[in-house]
Length: 441
Image 1 (cartoon, rainbow, N blue to C red):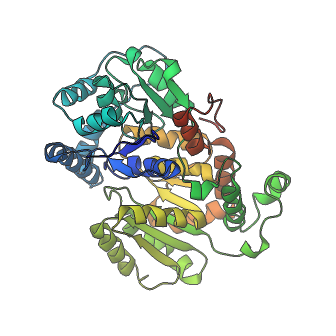
Image 2 (image 1 turned 60 degrees about the horizontal axis):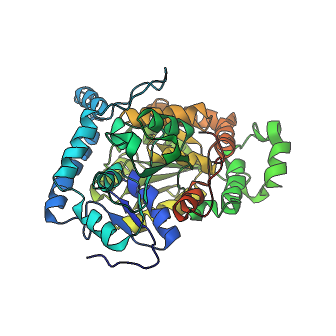
């Protein structure tokens, strides 16, 4: 049984459904100095609850992987789109009527899913901060009186994130974009229960509300992303006013492109298609590449095989990140992001890392929510759509030569909210009434 705490530090809870909910929750847990708990694991979930969570997880991961297979991917994608469907935001209308998803959540709550968490909340009186909708909805359904906070991890979401009867919810939604706020209100959540904070980016990559680490990394990145000075010659005065002189020692240093697959291992086979086109640049030292396998040994083996097939095994410009321990993986990933210049990934929660001044190359989305994420990052000018992987060396080279990736890095820093972690902490502590978050949303 979890111990109670007189200090009323929050329970920070996620669910192991891919990396997205865990990645958002970990910086919050670290900020409060509490362990990150999983709703689907002990001590919150007993054997019966674990079994149900495991069945849901296996189904999700299998669907994600199958959706990427040629031939089979089409029908599976249709199924995935139905599961993750999100209605058009405009014309604005009341969408508070319960859906099949919200009714399913209510049935799970009636059956007792989440009862371990509910017992811990009632015994301790501690607030709940969760990055997955079900723990907040289960506690709300059970009329738990503790403060309940749900951190939303996509730019737009399915109806299942809000309660069946949103008007009476006690859940406070902390959302990453203004669009997300409008969506939650359409789903019936009172505007007083929705706060635009931004996404909780790791403190190790931001450095506090004045962004000292972020700004230092951006200054270095802009030099590496703009080898022909195409972008810097256009906006040099603005760069100097914000960042001061850029580090001359970065001139001529090859940019680092990081390719990160999803937590379910989706899209690992993209590496097989783009590696041959990058071989000459990597061998000549004009480009560096990091492949992120996450915590799955099978994905690591798959990526290693593709590297060998492309004739790049042992190449000095190629590295692979694999770490079986989840917490260690996230720590090493953040260290990698500090030196990464371009992030190539499907538009999952990693799209929010564009706010760090990281240009995003958007791989094909998996699910409707990722299509909305891709639209958001591209509309803000911080991301570009992936071109043909077989010719990646050509279009990547052109994007660098034209300064387009440097411009995307600049747009991400200027337009997207960066202080989400600190504003979430303020909201949970109740230190002050949150004002407008920085950046666009």
